[in-house]
Image (cartoon, rainbow, N blue to C red; front, side, top):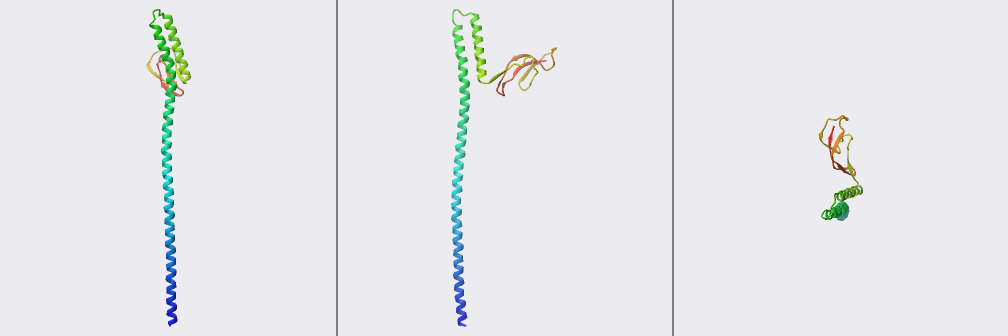
Length: 178
């Protein structure tokens, strides 16, 4: 009996030590998993912060590029308008002179109009002059209607020309329609 009780107590001690070992292993595994999760969490936070910074930089670059594009387009238009301004100032000087002749004034206006048309070509601004063409509500604005022998819905008179910048309508042509 003594032997049996010794064996039981040895196995009980052995069982306790096996349980302690497995408990320690489980605890070690939990600690390892926690460490891995903490490390992964740090990596994800770092990635999040980098992504956020990259997005902010992208937004700043985009805004700067848009401002530069706007400035460039304004600069191009402005430099072309300076040519017209120079011509107007030269015409003003001539008009104040003692020998101002109507022919010179007419010639100056013709040159100024030619210069403006050349600038419009450079800037891709297209004139809309729909005389004797079918009325198009996309680029014409009817100011009045008039009875005519021509077909219905035809432009009889252009009160003010319209203009397009490539495909964008800048101003519709003001017209009288049959």
